[in-house]
Every structure is written in C-alpha cells, then in structure tokens.
Length: 210
Length: 254
Image (cartoon, rainbow over all chains, first blue to last red; front, side):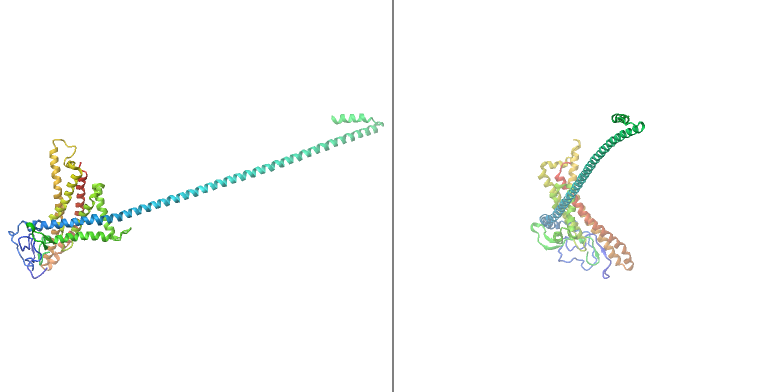
C-alpha cells in the first residue's frame, strides 16, 4: 500500500527474527519495523521458528491454559451452569404447574357441566312425571264424571220407563173399563138387554189377551 | 499483520512475552499474549453467561435465550451421545465447547490472537478429554475398562490383531482431536492472510492492480465466511467427539 517502500514481500517462513527464537520480547521492536525488505537466510531458521512449533513457548502456554481452563471449569460448574439450570428448571416447573392448574380448571368445568346436565335431566324427568300424573288424574276425573253421569242417566231412563209402564198399565186398565162399558152399551143397543157385567168383562179380557 | 508492507502470514501466531517470569529450572516462563487471550476468553464466557441470565426472567430475552440455547445445545449433545449418565461430564464438555468456540471466534477479530491455532493448546485440551476417559474408566470399571480394546464376537485367532487395532485407534484419538482443531484454525488463518496479502501487493502495483485486487478481496470475503463456519463447526466437532469418547468410559463394553 505504501509508496515509500519497494515491492511488498511475502515471507512464509520466519520473518522478524530478532533473535534465534521467535519467543521474542514484545518490548524489543522487530528488525523490519519500517517495512524494510529483509530476506531472512533460510539457514538461520531452525525448527522452532514456526511459532506453533516453538517448544520454548510450551511450558508457559500449558501453565496458563491449565489455570485459565481450570478457572473456566470452576466458574461454569459452580456458578454459570447451576444458574442457567435453575432458570430452566423454574420455567419447566412453572409450565408444569400452569398445565396442572389448567387441567384442574378443565376438570372443574367438566364436573359443573355434568352437574348441569344431571339437573336438567332430573328436572325434565320430574316435569314428565308431573305431566303424566296430571294427565292420569284428569282422565280419572273425567272417567268418574262420565260414569256418574251415565248412572244418573240410566237411573232417569229406568224411572221414565217405569213411569211409561205404569201409565201404560193404567191406560190399559182404563181401556178395559171403557171396553167393557162400551161392549155393554153396544150389546144393550143391539139386543136391548143389558148383559151381565161379569160376562162382558170376561169377554173383554179374552179379547184383550188375544 | 507484519509492519509495513512485508506480509507475513505466520506473524499472527507469534507468542509475545508480556511479563517475563524468568526461567526457573531452565524452563522459560512468561505471561504471554496467548495467556492474556485465554483469560480474556474465560472472562468473556463467564460475563456473557452471568450477564445474560442476570434477570432470571421466566420469558427469556435475546441474550438469555442465547445463554439457554448454548446450555441446552451442549446438554442435548451430551445426553444423545453419552446418555443421562454422561451428564456428570456436562460441565467439562460445556467448558471445552465454550472455550474452543470463543477462542475460535475471538481469533476472527482482526489483530486478535487465536489461542486454538497453537498445537500445544489443542493437544492439552485433547489430553484433558482422554485423561478423563482413562481415569474415570479405570476408577469406574477397574480392569473391565480394558474390555474397550477387546471386541466381543471375534474369532480367537483374530483377537490379537483386533486388540492392536483398537489400541491404535484409541491412542490416535487425542492426536486426531488436537490436530483437527489446530490444523483447521492454522490453515484457515494463513489462507485469509495470504489472500489479504495479495490485495496489498496488487494495489501497490498501480491502478490495474487496484482493479485486479477485487478477485482476492472476493476470496477473502468468502474465506472469512467459511472461517466463521469452521470456527463454530470445529467447536461442535470437538464437543461431540469428547462426548463419544466419554461414552466409552461410561460403557466400555462394545
């Protein structure tokens, strides 16, 4: 990018070796601090020039990794993870509680609905029985009324028949007397002698009977 | 990035001393940029998780959802591969997953140091996993743990070969686990730097270079997207393989 220096240079291998090891002090500036093109002689580079393979840095890295990772493990297992676990558990419990309560409410409403159904059914049944009873009573009453009326009527009928019979007998008796008298009078007119009343009556009875 | 116009794709992996602690017993010790980033990662993970869950709300907000999602994601991974018994390793798997994930993502920040691009770090993480498997396996099952290397239902004359193969496959696990993460991060970051370097080099040649630099720029954009995918994917792969290996410690019989 800068125009001041020459062409940019790629150094795949070790570039800024101020010393033999790359485990350099950060306070000492690298040799190529001002973009000066430096060609590191390949002979100078030994096995540890590639930083990840520089064994001199291993002990420090391992020690600090052990401390840092141990600290991370402690923080995670003692503080952070139990904390998240509690939150998740609380939410889980809360949801379970809410579901349980909802289930309870549902059961309650179902029971109420059932009770209502039952009340409705019993009321319906009661109404039915009342209706039946009333109908039965009314029909019984009507029946009784009809029967008494019939009895009354038949009584009146019998009385009327009796009266008719009486009247008829009386009339018949009158007819006999009149017939006897008439027969006596006719005989008297025809032959001029009054017939024996008893014989006329007997003859009239004989005629009436025939 | 190297200073000036010298483009050095390896410079980003440089370890610098921040506090030199001398060399007790001939071993050089120092607080380095790598260590600083490790502690930064730990602090970031911890503050993210505690800050996100500060409200402890019943209906989670965005950050709390993210924290809960990471928790449940790792928990379901552990549960599905190692069963409910495996949940005793959940803090370990979660720590590993979050550490690798945050290390990879922080490494994507320009000028940041990628902790997981150093093989010693990934190897140490892999050894934590394998060490846990071996120690827990023997503590839980005793010598029965060795049945891991003896597959059942194999003819007797084949058994020695099978044991050798199983042994080799077991020993190669920490190597593959550490190399996979290390190589992915290293190669990805180098590729990004190389293509970014092409842009700088081409623009330095003049106007034609400015137009030509569009190609490597497009490449860098594509690589950046790919690297974000790789960063998340490698953390997930590391966690899943950890679960699978821990499952062996729980159930050594084949």
